[in-house]
Picture 1 (cartoon, rainbow, N blue to C red):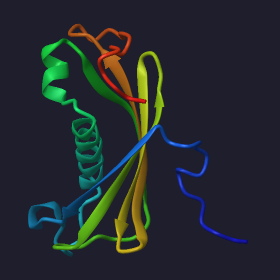
Picture 2: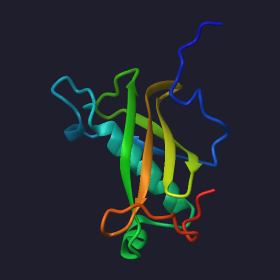
Picture 3: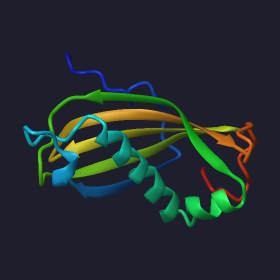
Picture 4: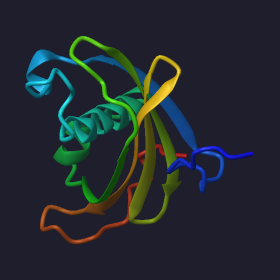
Length: 141
């Protein structure tokens, strides 16, 4: 079987999954009406933010408590262009929730096709930018 390898092939069963729909907006597109490559990481952030919200949390409360989740690694693979007004699904998976880091994978679907996929690693930091243990109150797994 000869199939295209995806960034998520090497992962185990995700700890959690979540999916949102996003419509490509005009200002997100280049002059050819294709979504600009810098927009996909924004959609990834929307996916993980809504995953946290669906699990009863939100970034505002985390930051007020001195917990900051900083992206320290980002991988993106573009497979198919998304164009203005296309409706896509951003599928987010929580892969790892370690003591000080969190890893997610993402797939952006245009219909049944993967338009883009990616991975992020987030580090849990305090107000001074030092690594800290992820609080137990942050329900991840």
